[in-house]
Length: 334
Image (cartoon, rainbow, N blue to C red; front, top):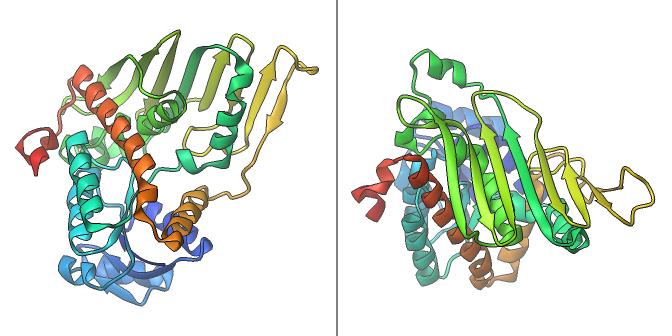
């Protein structure tokens, strides 16, 4: 399994390490800037580098890994599929559900793999939480917090325009961090009856922080995320018979979680941890490599159905908060 990467930020560093750990080879890297591409290739010991989009897509890796700004995910994934490549696209998959619907149809037509590089469903601890969930009895309340003061926030306050805080690039706290929380909740409990998003917005319309509220039959889930301040990150699921608590972000669940039920002999409950890798991208990379080796793109159908549910929820949350991206207009019907 060979991979060509798009982008040169820290997440690409981590993905390359994870992909190699899963037995894949990185055959090429791309950046719009030739010097940046050359330097990044040298950093990772990759022989081929490109600043020409067409040449890169025709360099024939098995997969294109897309880690461009959010607003470019759709075009890169579309062009890669049309070039006959399989795709691994960083989260959030795309800017709108309409874009993802087109990609899913295209991947099916081309008989290619289309994966979202979203850690949550691949984490062993997430799978273990799903397994233990019935022990909590009837679910009553769910809380998640993912707070991460951005290193780019200072530049934003100085009047600069980093992609992360730019609606032109589909930026903001919801797209960057709360997407993990939303997917965590949706993968466990399905589609809610109602979704609301209460956001602290900047003058340019982007959300710097905010709280999602998802109403289910019998319980409420809240998901907070911030890029303008720090806080304690956690996941807590409360049921009538007990609770699950993880002192980590929904994106990694590092350190495991505590399960406490009414039948516990110790008041602190029991700790579970099924994860060994510090770089949690190893789990998704291993799943992608195994699926590709099996050779049937239909394995993507269920994950893509979940991704479409998440994309529709994201559309609804942004609409509720009045957050608008260029992709919501005519460009969103590309």
